[in-house]
Image (cartoon, rainbow, N blue to C red; front, side, top):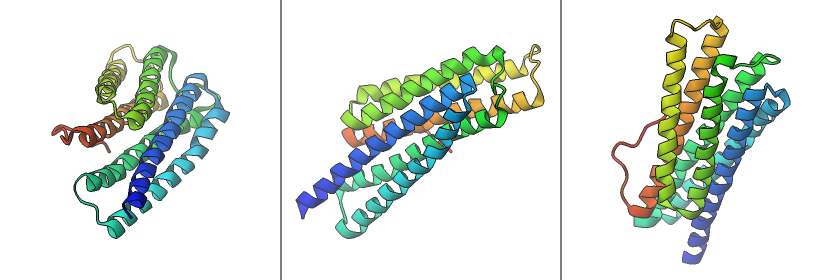
Length: 220
């Protein structure tokens, strides 16, 4: 019975890695689509998000069954509950990548990001891709040094988010009302993406060390 339970716990971990890899692909493609006004690529991100949602539902159902049937305690309980929390964060990260792609689709054939802010959003894209890639690797090897680097990139995403507000509120902003809305939303999507990655990173740190950060973010 214990061998079966251990195998199920291992499978949960492997499924989280697979889910994270899919989110990594989603945010990478969403960012490329945004910066290049690539409609087919944006459409592929939107369609693939259904698969990420299905992965979360399947993983969560198995976690609930483990809780009900195995009644895990101590470390095992921590693993199952953490898997539930992390799958929710990864699903939300997939949603945020989809939101970026939907903005791209809504503005096609025009670029959603004004030329004056293309540099800022290129940096946001690069940081989000690093965050996603490191999250996948962290879930694979539980190297908590990676958790720290994820938080560093999240800090960069926060700073770039603030830069978008500085640009919007500055006297030189000449964008349309639609561009103002798009920049506001896109900046928020990337900032939230980083927060959810930090949530996953801190949950992995908790699994490794048994200590959960008191100032862990509560991303929406």
